[in-house]
Amino acid sequence: MVGTLAEAVALIMDGQVLVAERKVTKPGTLCKPEVTIRLLRQTLAWVSRGGYKLAHGLAHFALSVTGAVCLDVGAATGGFTDVLLQHGAARVYALDVGYGQLAWKLAQDARVVVMDRCNIHRMLPEQLPQAVDVLTMDVSFIGLEQALPPAVHCLRAGGHGLVLIKPQFELSRAQVTPGGVIHDPALHQEAIARFTRLSERLGLQVHGATPSPVLGPKGNQEFLGCFRKPLPSVDTIYT
Image 1 (cartoon, rainbow, N blue to C red):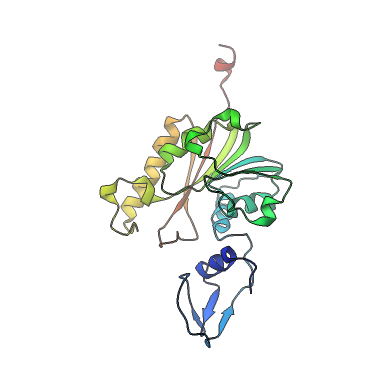
Image 2 (cartoon, rainbow, N blue to C red):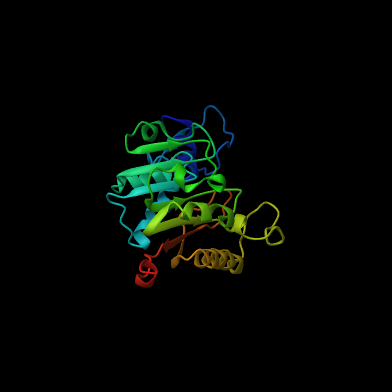
């Protein structure tokens, strides 16, 4: 039905798989061999469901990536990378701490520079041959407090960032319930506020945050935060 396990998982989590005409959204769900399995849609628009998150963010904040050089932090299968390319990016540095996760069609694309086994928390700006126009980020088990500062150093002045805010990784342990699913809207707003404070501390201009149209793997509501790295002021240039 599909080419890879990753594609199958993405379709299941996107609600595109019917088992005995009932929608199944949990990968690994057991079913009898004789049960009919049907796809509502054969393929996703992107290589993973994460692509829908970034596509929504680009549309919501009216960001164009046509001709842009991009850094995709936490690329994984490449949902964000795929969206950037399909929206006209000239080059994407696909960075991930893992290895061999990027979809084959993206890994073979001449516009993609695969940066596996690279931890953004320990990355130096000189590891990239150029400053980037657009920064995207989807990281887990590490908060933006650790991941965003080194990534911002790779962004050129005037460039934009669109990052996924995951409340379960932004809040304190005391605020996260067992199981790691955050339902309280007040805690969602606290996670967004932490992103805003961090961004402003880094000298960024925050454009806001919008809810992701796709929930996280456990059902967490996530958000896309947008910012711009300002150009240096005239006073700074001539000081």
